[in-house]
Length: 419
Image (cartoon, rainbow, N blue to C red; front, side, top):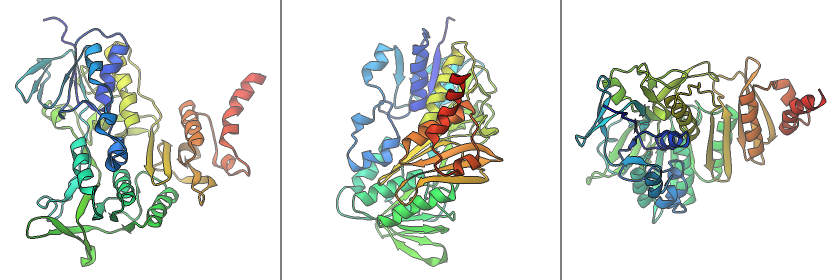
């Protein structure tokens, strides 16, 4: 049998970027991109923001036009799922019965929303999650029209973005979060407080440290009440659940690949089968920035990992070392995060927090690990470069009166020019 080519399972950002990067590197073999949604690959970040308001259309979301796939000779198989991987025969069986042979297989299977494990959550209408385009279309329809009472369960990025968008559209919004603060695993306490203050100022009710215990509905089976611990009840016409995601590892498990909160890969993003790679939300990889295996849910991570996978398939094995970065928009705040701030033991804030333009520098054992910035894009860009280059920056330097990140970043260049 001749060359089989590359099969990519998952037509999200990471899967599409893998196919595109292979062609950009001059890969001439067959490329098949398998997606379970019956649409062209699309952007997910706008689904909780501009798409819900109607400012962004479905066409605006498309990552590439249909003509791109023909021009790049990429076989896009949409609206079907991969059912099984036969590693011995190096084939993928689709639910349609079709079989795809491969030389290299890329798992970009993404993740799915966690469901709310309380009575009523799985049986009442009006209880939604937001992950894909169909989810967003359903939510947008419900948010179009007269004001509704919306309860968002979970104060993570998705939950808070949906809350901000719904409030902008004039709906009554309550956010319920089990942790003692919003985005507790992703942000510093100072940044969490600033975001919550923004929501409170916009008229959102935010309930922290509260558990949802049950959902109650009408005789017609539509959600009407969210019950909290302590028997408090909150009226609801609509409930959006945003309590995190689970990586889609079922295919990998069936193929007896190593999994554990994601598909486990090495520094080159290969699984324990050297012909099988994994990337994006479903992959658990060794991070030089965290010092351990982690799984990241971000567009940047998926896109950057796609380039490393494509390089490996083309024979140029390079480790994945990109600096993680994330962003969110809520009301007039643009939050950008460079690096990984979890596990920090010291922070220094610069700028004007009250005015909504500031940065929080996070250190662990004296070393800069991440920077959170609100409406300071220059700080974000410089922080990414500093973290990538390993340039030293101490908390004491940041505390100095008049500290300016741009000036600090220029110093190594100035030293080199005077050498």
